[in-house]
Amino acid sequence: MAAPSIDPEPPHKLFDTILTLDFGSQYTHLITRRLRELNVYSEMLPCTQKLADLDWKPAGIILSGGPYSVYEEGAPHADPAYFELGVPILGICYGLQEIAYRAHSENVIAGTAREYGHADLKAKRVDGHVDRLFKGLEDEMKVWMSHGDKLAKLPEGFHVIATTQNSEYAGIAHKTKPIYGIQLHPEVTHTPDGTKILENFAVGICGAKQNWTMAKFVDQEIARIRKLVGEKGQVLGAVSGGVDSTVAAKLMHEAIGDRFHAVLVDNGVMRLNECEQVKQTLSDHLGINLIVAHAGQQFLDGLKGIQDPEQKRKFIGGKFIDVFEEEAKKIEEAAAHSEKAGKIEWFLQGTLYPDVIESISFKGPSATIKTHHNVGGLPKRMTEGQGLKLIEPLRELFKDEVRELGRQLGIAHDLVMRHPFPGPGIAIRVLGEVTPERVEMARKADHIFISMIREAGLYDKIGQAFAALDPSRAVGVMGDKRVYENIVLLRAVETTDFMTANPYPFENSFLTKVATRIINEVHGVCRVAYDYTSKPPGTIELE
Ligand SMILES: Nc1ncnc2c1ncn2[C@@H]1O[C@H](COP(=O)(O)OP(=O)(O)OP(=O)(O)O)[C@@H](O)[C@H]1O
Ligand SMILES: O=c1[nH]c(=O)c2[nH+]cn([C@@H]3O[C@H](COP(=O)(O)O)[C@@H](O)[C@H]3O)c2[nH]1
Ligand SMILES: NC(=O)CC[C@H](N)C(=O)O
Ligand SMILES: [Mg+2]
Image (cartoon, rainbow, N blue to C red; front, top):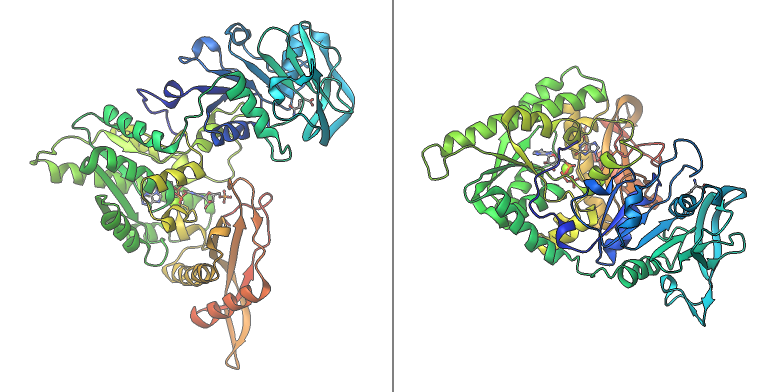
């Protein structure tokens, strides 16, 4: 995982920020998402974060849900100092139980029945009106619950602000301090009024300004990069033509112009005409100084004989660095006698917030399913070997925020909405051994599939689609002749976060047309199959 970059003025110092302390719920990041959708900036930190180690003051604090029971040994607890800070606090589910438990350990017990799913919540009226947490939500509302523990008693100094049939204490508030607790999950879409509750907390109660906008972020980020890099600093960036690296590159170009050097590695396993197209888009349309390093042969030679997916990924990750290191040297040598002479000090990376969240989440990094080449090792060996410092302008953003940022920067719709494409490219879509002939078959099939998806107007409805080549062969009859040829696997998924995904439900007739074209046009293929596996248990890529 990327090392933190040096930030002179990170967003939490520029915007009113709600701090979300993560107690391990599956939904914690959604709290941050919902707040940002309200234009309120929010960051998530593990529940073990001590207030004294925080160098900024949050406008409010949210304690998330979590899988533990507050009363069990080893259960996590928030630093008591947050309760002395004087800023509003909202506990959600485990967070509510944490608030009650710290008042008295007997306040929370195991419930007799788990409450999982929908419930009808009634905000309680006091002197004729509901609490300000439920402002504008006077009527009964549908909410979503997921808990087994419950409050046995109301903590001292609190009163009830909402109930459900099963939860006497579905919402509580301190009588004099701005401390709130709710048993329901406002962050999930199954609670339709949840965003309003979060807005009432963040804006109404914490007084956070709703000024987190992409336009403002762009200006601030450009200023931040200029300050960080200085007047002469040079930045190297690995740019794939994918959304993240293109947006990061454009931002960098806006900030420092030609002192930014983008390098695209033609690794021999890119899609049809991809390198030419990326070069054209970046150089001609976006004005970015892009160098294409033609290293296809090196990659394909090194892949010879490798069957194992992890071995392929590791080889490709390592080779990428070799090529970048060579390019960095070449750029420095070429500039040696010009006014741009000097060492390249910085390395740009398109790290996104989900990567950061995964590394700081209380649950800890997830088990390694596959080594993503960029996360696995690229920056570390790169930065250590070359003594480069990392710069990560997107590390606070979610993917759809990056897309929005791309639009703000004037990047064309097609590029902004482009499906992700993994760094190891077609090499992990040719299952088993990678040979130039097999890469070519997968490449042609992929091109036909994607073109037909575009023509059918389906591209933006699909999260990611591609064709892969199976390592086995099948018998067929073509032109009255027996053939024993290759099998193409088509995969297309609907997903928003790429963590979970469902197969895209194409019409049969569409898939039949795609299969016919692939068999007719891609020499060496006699069968086409569609992959119906969701993620989990499958992953999006096949290797
Ligand atoms: N062929 C390549 N040449 C140079 N850099 C690459 C190449 N492939 C991947 N990278 C680097 O690896 C990073 C991670 O790749 P990843 O696919 O996650 O992001 P992306 O390509 O920018 O965007 P997307 O997720 O939309 O494909 C890229 O941001 C880029 O820095
Ligand atoms: O840059 C990348 N380098 C990699 O090594 C890599 N492996 C998978 N992916 C992409 O990550 C998303 C999730 O993929 P999986 O479900 O296969 O893990 C999907 O979008 C995949 O395309 C990669 N991206
Ligand atoms: N979703 C949650 O935060 C659950 C909290 C606690 N583990 C319970 O079962 O009640
Ligand atoms: Mg990519």
